[in-house]
Length: 184
Image (cartoon, rainbow, N blue to C red; front, side, top):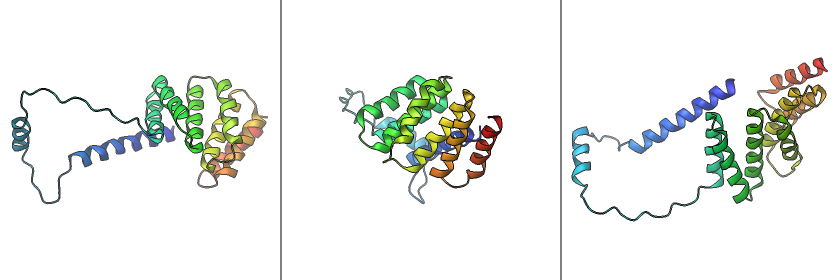
């Protein structure tokens, strides 16, 4: 729950900062709203619209961000399309792993942990990706195992999180592992 709130705040701040930079003026300049509006409309004529130019295909990393936004907004189909585009158009192992983790998260959100488990295990078995991706896949794998009352596998996955990404969340992950062992 806290993670969703933090993501929402982060996304909100990103939108605010992009809106501010798009409308910011140089230091010391005063902008008169009426003058700005008058200037805007005075430069517009009734001429034909210019022909549109082709827009470049978004970079795979941008698609990951866009898909994450859709995922957190609950628009799972749009998110799935973005992540599948990354898988089809990228050769970067880390981006492919991130796309797979997000696709697994879509399955988890749709209560389809059975489909998410093989994807997450595949990500964990990749040796060339960053440790934080291994850790994220381990966490979600542990959550899926808990759904099926596979407590020993869940505890192992939560311990793998700590092995891959030691840090602030160690205590929480070890507690999750201990809870899973206690239920076994």
